[in-house]
Image (cartoon, rainbow, N blue to C red; front, side, top):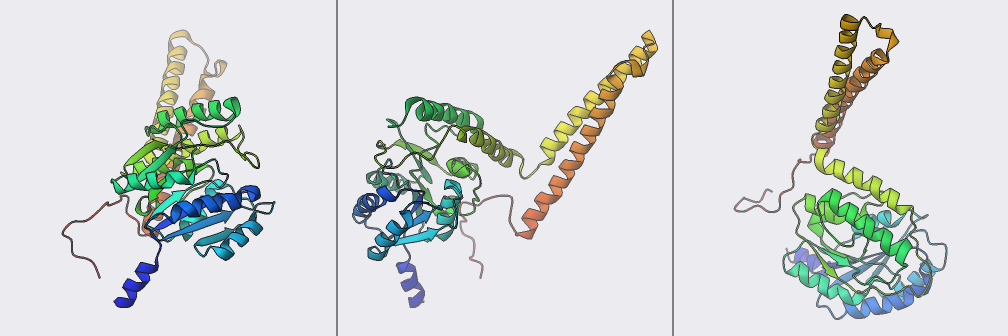
Length: 328
């Protein structure tokens, strides 16, 4: 028992997650500022830096920093997988009960971390940074980002001003089972909200980039929209995919039935040959599409049941249990 308590006390309470791609010129200064801030906190911490296949001297700089900072842990990818994969790897290897994600480009300010943690202490589960006065290109970054943020907020129902800000704080229990792909790291607040988490947004500092160049382009907007569609589907129809496939299939079958009745009406009343109009083809095509959609819904239902039963997962998430006996 004493050994278990001793091991628990050695585990860090706070895990800082840092995705890095070609930030060699920023790493030394970033680590200096970050560790200065963290050492003022009365928390045991770790910093997990993920080198996402950098082609510059980022890994060498990280090794130098890790040699004199035992709290700095490095995950080195074989190639570039993207920011979402880097954050997912950091989450998978993190030991803390609280996570804070931050970029290493010195545009996010580590001095904002205590403010984020203070809101977690007030009972929030996710604290998202808002770059209220963003120091980036007006058209290619700020305007496009504003459009994307409004679109995401409208489609998801989770209204945030800045989904793209990496600086966020999370409780471990709200994201421990989240699996991220594509560009979905920015949707973590939506995943958390889906599980009943309390999400809040606060303004944070944002600085102009001094070294290196931005890794984001306009093409990311298309990826974000497609990933958002996936998130919305998982939110609304993951447990019952038959609702969307079956609903679509029935709607198309009704169209097929309607075109068939119109075709019969034209034949009986006006003597119009069935093969002289496109109605016969439309009827056959829509019937096949509707039938296949319903079959896809049935197959999706079997896949979902296999997913839950094979992993012994429940289709719900419990926040806490009161007055239940602890299972051995």
